[in-house]
Length: 482
Length: 139
Image 1 (cartoon, each protein chain N blue to C red):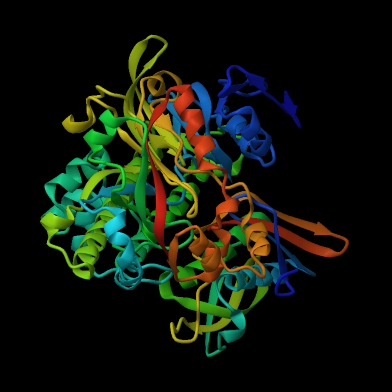
Image 2 (image 1 turned 120 degrees about the vertical axis):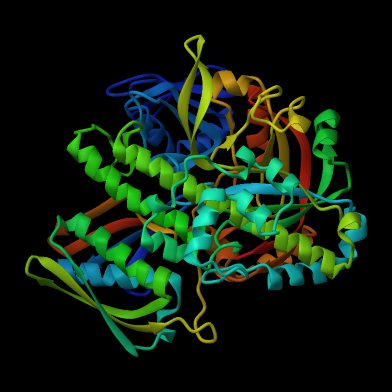
């Protein structure tokens, strides 16, 4: 199969190879069904998989997940692992919203009991949890405290009384990336971070109340504390303006390095530096600091959500039982051990719009999940379904321990808004039994369900490919957006 | 065309913006205004404060990127909204003068969050009918 100048070889019902040509150092590998590939070829995402395959030190494959779509530099849904000696790190392989991610919180509540209270609960969440552009958090940080956040991530939140030990334990990397250096974060980035901790932001970020409607794997569901009919809560946000600024700042640094070292990269947004270089090491320090800010941000949002639900219902914390199932990012670059050419190696894995998905037995998982694999959350659109999966063994062989991160857009924002002319998002969502509160109606129109691929089809691909298995399906009941 | 000076081209996830102007300084000014048109209803922004930004000499695409980033920072850092912009080449560099006011939540609504101006697919072309810029905003 060919699309424009891209040659695609179908290697299974769920995977396609882009053979190595020109300056590609490795082939491309894209997970998708034949039907999904018809959507994927419509934009520049496959060209971007090829571009990433040109990066120095890339190992095995340049990988695309089934929710892949056009990004900048890397595609959204792109994964690339780099040799730590010869390879590079690229801010374009992480994205502007460093460590943007998703937290799922379970509860003791059933949706049947909660549904009559949803209108007041959604209003309270929209009022109490800062969302939208320009919103500020309830915590005011001075420089010293901000630096503690950048170094400590969720550990800072535990010490400040906004998180339990359990919250931190059930967060990727314990909610704190090592190597963070506040001095690697610019003054402009810090200024953007002082008042945004604990804010949701806008765009596709959200709080969501869902019902567990289907269980596929009772063992994993039980380990994650999920049961049918249960009310659960999603938090989707990232490192806010501080993270965007760190990315922007280091793109300039990397562009200078790329020119100076005459690195041959096919897209300027793939500007990069060798991992071992001063520029590469500095970016990794800034990246870890911004990632820690994101962990702390989601923790504060979770804290606000928990407090608001308990106050609104009202319920004692023990009765509400709102606990973190897991918190995992989908925009990051991390050092991990993977088997390459038959031997374990320390590599740097870029995941841009891709979720870490470690299988059962992985030593980095909390003991409670080691028997079933790492929770992987795949929010769909706000009208249909979201999924909980668990990392599976093939992820380590095929995708450097990675799975998809969402449904993936299929419609531009302009097209989505135009398709909503004369229609009411609120009314249409109400017909689907979904309550919506939002700050910007324009953004809401851009987030309509048909703007996204069918998340069920995306999840089926990763399940059938063996990189993550389905655990539970969730149905949205209420959404709060910025 | 949207707002008379820019238009959005198809892009799956972000905003691909096209701006046209008769000369390069105007292209930079109209591009800065386009960013603010995508943030808010510029007609509601008063011209009560003036600010100026100076950019060093660079190739046109780099200069436009600097202008766009600098303009977005006016909002990201100081919550300053731009009603209109004017630009001139000075000493090889570019001087951008903007008129606007700090955001007032009672009068201004912000339509969307613009995370960053990306360098991906950024282009500046000089043709017989003037200058055309294209750039992608991460939203």
